[in-house]
Image (cartoon, rainbow, N blue to C red; front, side, top):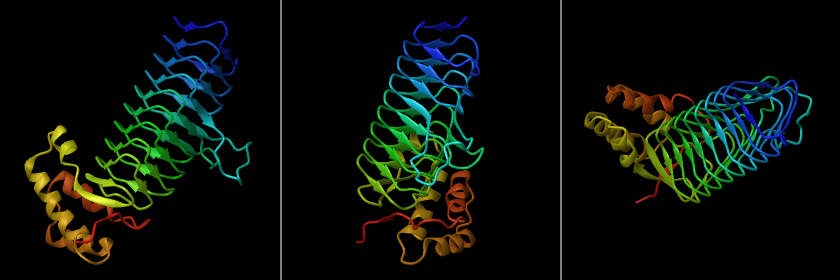
Length: 262
């Protein structure tokens, strides 16, 4: 049985699952798909093309599936926002749909988006990620699974943030952050995310290999992309985490965040 407040406005062409809660004055537009067990609190707006997988919770005043903030966008272009199962979206969060025809802005399962955080068009956020309050994610950003973005941090468009990375509060990131690292201030690396690695019970062998790869690729002078190729031959990447770290450099995009020069 669904619990739907009588003041909620739900279009007849929206698809609703079972065991839903929809609060007062929520607006659910045509083409929205809500799977079983979701909670949509008061004054939430779910715009056309929004898909909530099972068990998603959306807090008050959030707007999902809004038009991308891209001047060349044709509002008639069909596109989507997909929120993974059991993700929690707190108050005043905004997530914009893709600028590409039938494209999707994606948030993975079991994520936690805190109050007033923003995810722009065509972003891909992995599973078990946390975006703290007032985080700003620009368009086309890729964030790996189990990453943590601190409050007030701003991520430039087209940046990549690797799996298990941690970004400090109020950081300004305009470059890529490889997996399992911490970054703060403006594009400043601060070593491995050891706390996160230990919480995930990462083997000591993997942590040791990540330390060696970090030293060889990011503490040395030269192009990290080229240094990663050399490290692949000499240090090989025997552990799962080491392989993930090296594979991040196979794709050339923006420049990489680097440690402070000694």
